[in-house]
Image: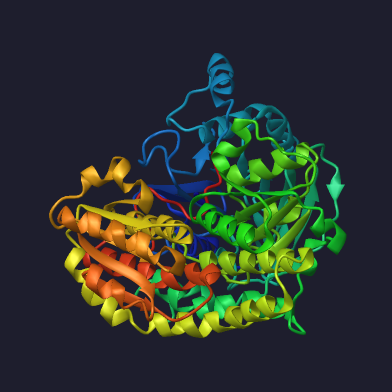
Amino acid sequence: MCGIVGYIGKKQAAPIILDGLSKLEYRGYDSAGMAVFDGEHIRTEKAAGRLAVLEHLTHGGETMQGYSGIGHTRWATHGAPNDLNAHPHTNQAGTIAVVHNGIIENYIPLKKKLLDKGYEFVSDTDTEVLAKLLDYYYRGNPLEAVTKVLHRVEGSYALGIMFADFPGELYAARKDSPLIVGQNAEGCFIASDVPAILKYTRSVYYTENQEVVRLKADGLQFFSVDEEEVTKEPATIDWDADAAEKSGYEHFMLKEMYEQPKTVTDTISPRIQNNDIVIEELNMTEEELKAIRKIHIVGCGSAYHTGVTAKYVIEDLARIPVEVDVASEFRYRNPILEEGGMVIVISQSGETADTLAALRESKARGFKVLGIVNVVGSSIAREADSVMYTWAGPEIAVATTKAYSAQLVALYMLAMKFAKVRGTIDEAAFGKLLYELRCLPDQIEMLLGQKEKIQHFANRYVGARDIFFIGRGIDYAISLEGSLKLKEISYIHSEAYAAGELKHGTISLIEEGTLVVALSTQEALFQKTISNIVEVKARGAFVMAVTNEGNKAMEKAADYVVYLPETTPCFANSLAIIPLQLFAYYVAVGRGCDVDKPRNLAKSVTVE
């Protein structure tokens, strides 16, 4: 959600801010704005629409001269996406400017108080309340004003703040919304995500909840909410800067699909040692692993779908009961967490608000939490008891591909580790699984090589209104993700169903020409799935099947078949998802959709 970039230093701020914001477009937004101190005043420009509008308005930042500034791309929550509601917001005199990610939950009573004090408001946002509240508390000491505001507001926030009286300083603060601070020889930066400043510095600081940062051209200071100075050590970002660029690909999503073999290799290779799975990040003894009685997996969207797959794999291999929860429902259903339970939370960004809340709920109940995340130093990485990183590098496209694949193999390795330690599989079975795991990158590469075949088929369905995905067992989990990929980037209505549920109502939606994508990778369920295919074909459906090579019976049942290389049924998702990603991508491209930045969606959902 939203993007923040700030800079103070020896160079012109506006071009740096615009460049940084362009690296955050993947997060989703509907307006953009910037405030720069021009030597006398804070000058603000903002506009609804894409960042290109703001770039045109400011001639690439050339018309906003100054060495300190803050910028923002907004994803509307309070108020329509228009110029007035765009950030930055200022006080009445224009001497304080604020950009904000998150939601101020008590903004209504705060706004009422300020109205009673004579303040006027021009926007519908909660953020303007922050600007006016800063003005109310400001008595010549910016740090004091910021901390007083933080004591009053409730909710989530990442803030960038400028005071005209202190042109040599920027201020930043956060609570439950991501914010990093960086520094190089020419200045200091704030950003809501690493790609925004990756080309300028790899030395970053991760701010904790309710910490305040004072940035100057030549250094940084950190303070607690009680104005006590805090000492922090920088972290080094080792992402390849080229990974945040398109590198000749038409879209980031296509590039990231093609990075999946490397992503899977990078995630599994360090953890395969001496023909064993070694997950040092677990920080659990074999006795503790044997004592696990139940696992709760929590995630949102695609991360939730990897959890559904993991339920089948862990229960099959390790014989541990697994519950999978949508993170936004987990803490509100008063979950039963019993002794011997383990909680696993999954998030690409490590900042997903609902998943972070589930983590905190679990820890508040005394349960240890394992986080599976992609971003080093993210909130979940810092707050979880242990963290297992997926080494996917920066993922820019809103629709996840490579991070999803990395999460899958991380969960496979956990399942294998649990199974071996608990003795639910023997050495021969473990060795076969290890061999199949190592084969996945090359098999994914081979499937990506079939893109022309998938593209040709996808072109037939750019005008589709409804598409259904069906499967049984792990194939149902694959269907969930395949359906989500299609709907989120092509805007075609798509649903995933457990194939056995078709006759309980869903089959009434099938009509002549409806495309049904049938997943059939579990050999024990081949005949059951073929029966479901026959059912929908009898109602006029056209069936695309994704199945294992050698399953020739599928050619008689389905109209179009994609074959997958041989692997263990437990790992089938890693292969079956590839043609579904390609299908969704080429349908969306054929419809002229903005594949990397689908409407109404954001990469990192940091508000509930």
